[in-house]
Amino acid sequence: MKPNNTPAKIIGSIQEFYNGRDPEEICIALEIDKNCFDSWIRDFGSIANELLELRDENETLRTMFTNLSLVNQSLRNSLDSLTRTDSKIFELLLKKRGTGNLSFP
Image (tube, rainbow, N blue to C red; front, side, top):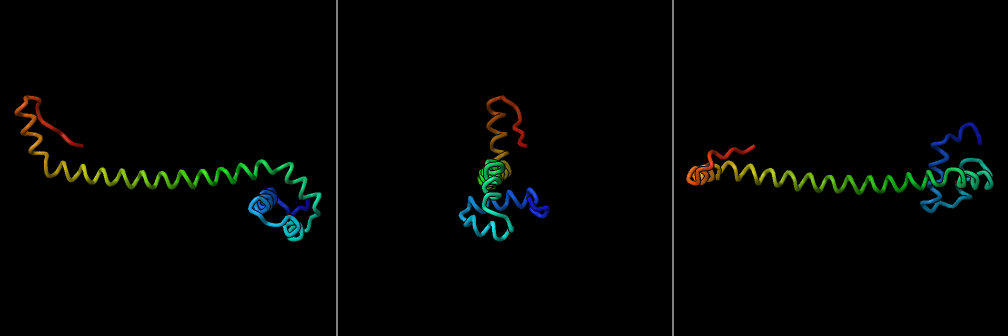
């Protein structure tokens, strides 16, 4: 391994390979021979593959979080609107039933 081929560069080159880049192009760019690159794939391929999978999962989770946050905010806005306009009606109904006051967060 050349000193300038850090673990980050190795993993990055393997990810490029998994993304469809020609291994010969990668070897030329990094100034290594094909056997060296093949050994990197054997040694670090699973790490690079797992990293790609985790990035995909992270993007999916971020999208889910964003969507759920929007739904949550919409529901909170609806609840705020409901509590402001109808809280007196609810309080009267509860008093009539004898259950006491209605408090909202």
